[in-house]
Image 1: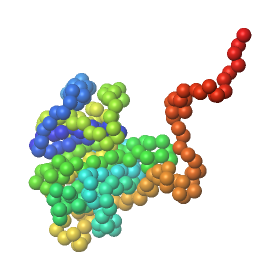
Image 2: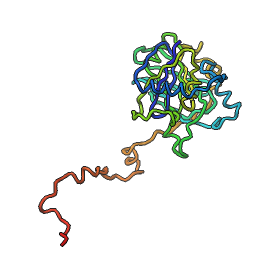
Image 3: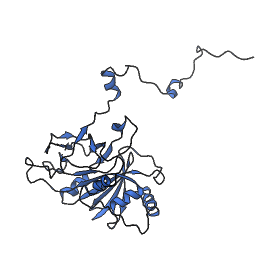
Image 4: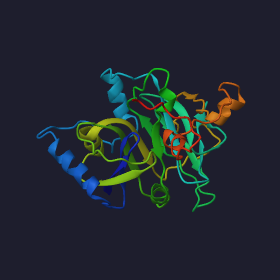
Length: 282
Protein backbone atom coordinates (compact mmCIF):
# COMPACT_ATOMS: atom_id res chain seq x y z
CA UNK A 1 0.00 0.00 0.00
CA UNK A 2 1.11 3.55 -0.64
CA UNK A 3 1.06 6.32 1.93
CA UNK A 4 -0.19 9.86 1.55
CA UNK A 5 0.58 12.78 3.86
CA UNK A 6 -2.15 15.38 4.03
CA UNK A 7 -1.82 18.78 5.61
CA UNK A 8 -4.57 20.51 7.54
CA UNK A 9 -3.69 24.17 7.89
CA UNK A 10 -5.62 24.85 11.09
CA UNK A 11 -3.94 22.09 13.07
CA UNK A 12 -1.16 20.19 11.36
CA UNK A 13 -0.76 17.34 8.94
CA UNK A 14 -2.66 14.18 8.18
CA UNK A 15 -0.90 11.00 7.17
CA UNK A 16 -3.01 8.65 5.04
CA UNK A 17 -2.41 5.08 4.01
CA UNK A 18 -4.38 4.16 0.91
CA UNK A 19 -4.05 2.87 -2.62
CA UNK A 20 -3.46 6.16 -4.38
CA UNK A 21 -0.40 8.34 -4.77
CA UNK A 22 -0.32 12.01 -5.60
CA UNK A 23 1.93 15.05 -5.20
CA UNK A 24 0.09 18.30 -5.68
CA UNK A 25 2.38 21.26 -5.04
CA UNK A 26 5.90 22.55 -4.56
CA UNK A 27 4.96 23.38 -0.98
CA UNK A 28 4.40 19.73 -0.16
CA UNK A 29 7.74 18.89 -1.77
CA UNK A 30 9.41 21.39 0.54
CA UNK A 31 7.72 19.67 3.49
CA UNK A 32 9.18 16.36 2.33
CA UNK A 33 12.66 17.86 2.08
CA UNK A 34 12.31 19.32 5.57
CA UNK A 35 11.25 15.91 6.84
CA UNK A 36 14.32 14.28 5.26
CA UNK A 37 16.63 16.82 6.91
CA UNK A 38 15.14 16.22 10.37
CA UNK A 39 15.15 12.42 10.33
CA UNK A 40 17.20 10.75 13.03
CA UNK A 41 19.75 8.30 11.55
CA UNK A 42 20.16 4.76 12.90
CA UNK A 43 17.19 5.02 15.27
CA UNK A 44 14.78 2.11 15.66
CA UNK A 45 11.24 3.43 16.05
CA UNK A 46 9.29 1.07 18.32
CA UNK A 47 5.78 2.21 17.40
CA UNK A 48 4.08 2.05 14.02
CA UNK A 49 0.74 3.28 12.67
CA UNK A 50 0.26 -0.19 11.17
CA UNK A 51 -0.01 -1.71 14.65
CA UNK A 52 -3.42 -2.70 15.99
CA UNK A 53 -5.61 0.15 17.28
CA UNK A 54 -4.69 0.90 20.89
CA UNK A 55 -1.02 -0.09 20.72
CA UNK A 56 0.27 3.48 20.47
CA UNK A 57 -2.19 4.82 23.04
CA UNK A 58 -1.24 2.04 25.48
CA UNK A 59 2.43 2.94 25.07
CA UNK A 60 1.59 6.58 25.82
CA UNK A 61 -0.17 5.57 29.02
CA UNK A 62 2.63 3.19 30.03
CA UNK A 63 5.27 5.89 29.79
CA UNK A 64 3.13 8.36 31.73
CA UNK A 65 2.67 10.82 28.88
CA UNK A 66 1.13 14.17 29.75
CA UNK A 67 -2.54 14.42 28.89
CA UNK A 68 -3.32 10.72 29.26
CA UNK A 69 -6.67 10.33 30.97
CA UNK A 70 -7.94 13.81 30.07
CA UNK A 71 -10.62 14.70 27.53
CA UNK A 72 -9.71 16.30 24.20
CA UNK A 73 -12.33 17.83 21.87
CA UNK A 74 -12.54 16.17 18.46
CA UNK A 75 -14.50 17.28 15.38
CA UNK A 76 -15.50 14.62 12.81
CA UNK A 77 -16.51 16.01 9.42
CA UNK A 78 -16.98 14.79 5.87
CA UNK A 79 -18.93 15.33 2.64
CA UNK A 80 -22.36 16.96 2.69
CA UNK A 81 -25.02 14.60 3.98
CA UNK A 82 -22.62 12.38 5.93
CA UNK A 83 -23.95 11.09 9.27
CA UNK A 84 -21.88 10.03 12.28
CA UNK A 85 -23.11 7.88 15.17
CA UNK A 86 -21.13 7.66 18.41
CA UNK A 87 -21.35 4.70 20.78
CA UNK A 88 -22.54 4.59 24.39
CA UNK A 89 -23.15 1.66 26.76
CA UNK A 90 -22.10 -0.83 24.10
CA UNK A 91 -24.50 0.40 21.39
CA UNK A 92 -24.43 3.04 18.68
CA UNK A 93 -26.58 6.09 19.31
CA UNK A 94 -28.75 7.90 16.78
CA UNK A 95 -26.76 9.31 13.89
CA UNK A 96 -25.98 13.02 13.73
CA UNK A 97 -25.21 15.05 10.64
CA UNK A 98 -21.52 15.86 10.32
CA UNK A 99 -19.63 17.72 11.59
CA UNK A 100 -19.95 16.11 15.02
CA UNK A 101 -17.87 17.54 17.86
CA UNK A 102 -17.29 15.68 21.11
CA UNK A 103 -14.60 15.31 23.78
CA UNK A 104 -12.72 11.99 23.73
CA UNK A 105 -10.44 10.41 26.30
CA UNK A 106 -6.70 10.62 25.58
CA UNK A 107 -5.34 7.08 25.54
CA UNK A 108 -8.56 5.42 24.31
CA UNK A 109 -9.78 3.99 21.01
CA UNK A 110 -13.22 4.98 19.72
CA UNK A 111 -15.24 3.35 16.98
CA UNK A 112 -18.03 5.29 15.31
CA UNK A 113 -20.55 4.54 12.57
CA UNK A 114 -20.61 6.44 9.29
CA UNK A 115 -23.77 6.44 7.17
CA UNK A 116 -25.31 8.70 4.53
CA UNK A 117 -22.28 8.32 2.25
CA UNK A 118 -23.27 10.47 -0.77
CA UNK A 119 -22.06 8.20 -3.58
CA UNK A 120 -22.90 4.87 -1.87
CA UNK A 121 -26.41 5.20 -0.38
CA UNK A 122 -27.35 2.51 2.11
CA UNK A 123 -23.77 1.47 2.89
CA UNK A 124 -21.95 2.13 6.15
CA UNK A 125 -18.45 2.17 7.59
CA UNK A 126 -17.10 1.78 11.13
CA UNK A 127 -13.81 3.73 11.45
CA UNK A 128 -11.67 3.82 14.60
CA UNK A 129 -10.06 6.87 16.13
CA UNK A 130 -7.14 6.43 18.53
CA UNK A 131 -6.46 9.51 20.68
CA UNK A 132 -2.77 9.57 21.61
CA UNK A 133 -2.25 13.15 22.80
CA UNK A 134 -4.03 16.45 23.36
CA UNK A 135 -3.80 19.96 21.91
CA UNK A 136 -3.16 21.98 25.10
CA UNK A 137 -5.41 24.86 24.13
CA UNK A 138 -5.79 27.92 26.42
CA UNK A 139 -7.70 27.09 29.60
CA UNK A 140 -11.43 27.49 29.11
CA UNK A 141 -11.14 27.55 25.32
CA UNK A 142 -10.49 23.87 24.65
CA UNK A 143 -13.79 23.56 22.77
CA UNK A 144 -12.53 26.07 20.19
CA UNK A 145 -9.55 23.91 19.25
CA UNK A 146 -10.79 20.38 18.48
CA UNK A 147 -8.71 17.80 16.62
CA UNK A 148 -10.12 17.91 13.06
CA UNK A 149 -10.90 14.45 11.67
CA UNK A 150 -11.87 14.81 7.99
CA UNK A 151 -13.39 11.87 6.12
CA UNK A 152 -12.88 12.62 2.43
CA UNK A 153 -14.82 11.02 -0.41
CA UNK A 154 -11.62 9.34 -1.58
CA UNK A 155 -11.03 7.79 1.85
CA UNK A 156 -14.60 6.52 2.04
CA UNK A 157 -14.44 5.09 -1.48
CA UNK A 158 -11.17 3.27 -0.81
CA UNK A 159 -12.53 1.79 2.42
CA UNK A 160 -15.71 0.60 0.72
CA UNK A 161 -13.55 -1.09 -1.92
CA UNK A 162 -11.68 -3.04 0.76
CA UNK A 163 -8.63 -0.83 1.41
CA UNK A 164 -7.43 0.28 4.83
CA UNK A 165 -6.94 4.03 5.08
CA UNK A 166 -4.82 5.26 8.00
CA UNK A 167 -4.16 8.86 8.95
CA UNK A 168 -1.87 10.18 11.64
CA UNK A 169 -3.05 13.64 12.68
CA UNK A 170 -0.37 15.83 14.25
CA UNK A 171 0.49 19.37 15.26
CA UNK A 172 3.07 21.04 13.06
CA UNK A 173 6.53 21.93 14.32
CA UNK A 174 6.62 25.71 13.91
CA UNK A 175 10.37 25.67 13.18
CA UNK A 176 10.01 23.61 9.98
CA UNK A 177 6.40 24.36 8.95
CA UNK A 178 5.86 26.20 5.68
CA UNK A 179 4.89 29.87 6.21
CA UNK A 180 2.01 29.60 3.76
CA UNK A 181 -1.44 31.09 4.34
CA UNK A 182 -4.29 28.62 3.85
CA UNK A 183 -7.93 28.23 4.77
CA UNK A 184 -9.11 26.44 7.90
CA UNK A 185 -10.59 23.60 5.81
CA UNK A 186 -7.79 23.37 3.26
CA UNK A 187 -5.68 20.22 2.99
CA UNK A 188 -2.43 19.65 1.15
CA UNK A 189 -0.90 16.33 0.23
CA UNK A 190 2.62 15.03 0.80
CA UNK A 191 3.68 11.57 -0.27
CA UNK A 192 5.82 9.13 1.69
CA UNK A 193 7.00 5.77 0.47
CA UNK A 194 5.39 2.50 1.48
CA UNK A 195 8.49 1.60 3.48
CA UNK A 196 8.13 4.63 5.75
CA UNK A 197 6.52 4.44 9.17
CA UNK A 198 3.54 6.81 9.09
CA UNK A 199 3.75 7.54 12.81
CA UNK A 200 7.49 8.22 12.61
CA UNK A 201 6.97 10.58 9.67
CA UNK A 202 4.38 12.57 11.62
CA UNK A 203 6.62 12.56 14.70
CA UNK A 204 9.48 14.07 12.70
CA UNK A 205 7.25 16.86 11.37
CA UNK A 206 5.40 17.64 14.59
CA UNK A 207 3.56 16.01 17.49
CA UNK A 208 1.06 13.21 16.67
CA UNK A 209 -2.28 13.54 18.46
CA UNK A 210 -4.60 10.96 16.86
CA UNK A 211 -4.68 8.01 14.45
CA UNK A 212 -7.71 7.48 12.21
CA UNK A 213 -8.25 4.10 10.53
CA UNK A 214 -11.01 3.57 7.97
CA UNK A 215 -11.51 -0.03 6.83
CA UNK A 216 -14.26 -2.35 5.71
CA UNK A 217 -14.72 -4.25 8.99
CA UNK A 218 -18.34 -4.47 10.20
CA UNK A 219 -19.90 -6.03 13.32
CA UNK A 220 -21.43 -9.50 13.05
CA UNK A 221 -24.58 -8.32 14.81
CA UNK A 222 -25.18 -4.59 14.98
CA UNK A 223 -27.74 -5.04 17.76
CA UNK A 224 -25.80 -7.63 19.79
CA UNK A 225 -22.97 -7.27 22.29
CA UNK A 226 -20.59 -4.74 20.72
CA UNK A 227 -18.24 -4.07 23.65
CA UNK A 228 -15.30 -5.87 22.04
CA UNK A 229 -16.01 -4.31 18.64
CA UNK A 230 -16.16 -0.90 20.36
CA UNK A 231 -12.87 -1.42 22.25
CA UNK A 232 -14.63 -1.31 25.58
CA UNK A 233 -16.82 1.65 24.55
CA UNK A 234 -14.79 4.40 26.30
CA UNK A 235 -16.68 7.45 27.58
CA UNK A 236 -17.03 10.71 25.70
CA UNK A 237 -18.40 14.10 26.66
CA UNK A 238 -20.71 16.38 24.64
CA UNK A 239 -19.23 19.69 23.54
CA UNK A 240 -21.51 22.71 23.37
CA UNK A 241 -21.44 24.30 19.90
CA UNK A 242 -19.85 27.74 19.73
CA UNK A 243 -22.70 30.31 19.33
CA UNK A 244 -22.42 33.00 16.67
CA UNK A 245 -23.27 36.67 17.21
CA UNK A 246 -26.91 36.30 16.15
CA UNK A 247 -27.45 33.45 18.63
CA UNK A 248 -25.85 35.46 21.43
CA UNK A 249 -28.11 38.44 20.67
CA UNK A 250 -31.23 36.25 20.65
CA UNK A 251 -30.30 34.70 24.01
CA UNK A 252 -29.64 38.12 25.57
CA UNK A 253 -25.93 37.46 26.11
CA UNK A 254 -24.81 40.15 23.65
CA UNK A 255 -26.13 43.70 23.12
CA UNK A 256 -28.10 44.22 19.93
CA UNK A 257 -25.82 46.85 18.41
CA UNK A 258 -25.06 47.71 14.83
CA UNK A 259 -21.91 46.03 13.59
CA UNK A 260 -18.76 48.13 13.65
CA UNK A 261 -17.95 49.73 10.31
CA UNK A 262 -14.41 49.48 9.06
CA UNK A 263 -12.34 52.66 9.37
CA UNK A 264 -11.69 52.92 5.65
CA UNK A 265 -15.46 53.12 5.10
CA UNK A 266 -15.93 55.85 7.72
CA UNK A 267 -13.43 58.22 6.11
CA UNK A 268 -13.86 57.32 2.47
CA UNK A 269 -16.23 60.21 1.62
CA UNK A 270 -14.92 63.50 0.29
CA UNK A 271 -15.57 66.34 2.81
CA UNK A 272 -18.18 68.87 1.71
CA UNK A 273 -17.87 72.65 1.99
CA UNK A 274 -20.16 72.63 5.05
CA UNK A 275 -18.06 70.10 6.94
CA UNK A 276 -16.46 71.46 10.13
CA UNK A 277 -12.81 72.30 9.68
CA UNK A 278 -9.90 72.92 12.00
CA UNK A 279 -9.04 76.57 12.48
CA UNK A 280 -6.17 77.79 10.29
CA UNK A 281 -2.90 78.40 12.07
CA UNK A 282 -1.26 81.77 11.57
